Length: 307
Image (cartoon, rainbow, N blue to C red; front, side, top):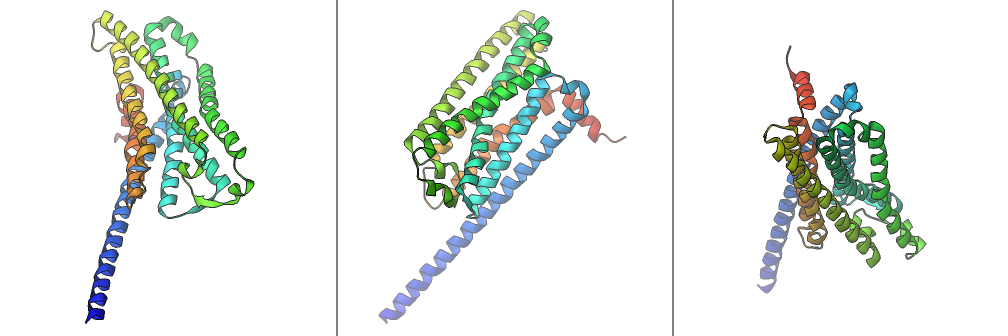
C-alpha cells in the first residue's frame, strides 16, 4: 500500500512538472513571437526611412539627417546583435569566448552611442535655432561625419579599457572556453563592473545636461517669437522627445540589477528588459522623424500613395 501511494505521488509530481515545463515553453514561444514581430516592424520602418535618405540628394548633405541616418543604422546594429544574443541564450547556444567578446563589444558600444547621437542632434537643433546665420557654416556634412567618428571612438574606449583589464587578469585558457554569450558572462572582475557602470552614468549625466541646456535656450527663443508654430517651438518639442528617449535608455541600466535574479523566470526578465528598455527607445527615433519631419513624411506618403 505504501509503495502504491509513493508511486501515485511520484506520478502526480511528474505530471505537474511536465505541465509546468510545457507552460514555460509556450510562454517562451509567445515572447519570441512578440519580439520578432517588433523587430521586423522596426527593421521595415528603418529601411523605408533609409531608402528616403539615400534616394534624396539634398537630404544626404544635411547635418540633421546625416546624424539621424547614423542613429538608425547604429540602433539597427544594436537591436540585431541584442536579438541574436537573446535568442542564443534562450536556445542554449554556446559560443567561443573571443567571438562572444566581439559581439558583446559591438552591442555595448552601439548602446552607448545612442545617447551620444541624441546629444549631437540636440546641439545641431540648438545651433539652427539660436545661431541660424552660423548654422550652414558650423553644421556641415563633413563636420557631421567627424562627429560620428568621435562618437565611435568615445563609445569604444570603455571596451578597450575592459579588454586590457581582462587580458591582464585572466588565464589564457579562459579564451578557449565556450559559454552562453551575454555580457554578465564576460564580467569576471570587479574592475569591469566599475568601468561599465561609471561609463554609463557619466555618459547619461553629460547627455542629460546637454539636452537640458539646449532645451532651455531653444524655448527662450520660442518665447520671444510668441508663436506655437515657430521653428523654435517645433525644435523644443523635438528636444522633449529626445529627453524621453534618453530617459528610456537610462531605464535600461535597471536591467543590470533586475537580471541579477537567477530564478526560473530569469529568461523572461531578460526578454522583457530587451523589449521594453532596448527596443522601445529605439522605436522612438524613426517615429520622431518619420512622422513629424516634413521631408520624410512627404516622401513616405508619396511612396505609398496610389497613382
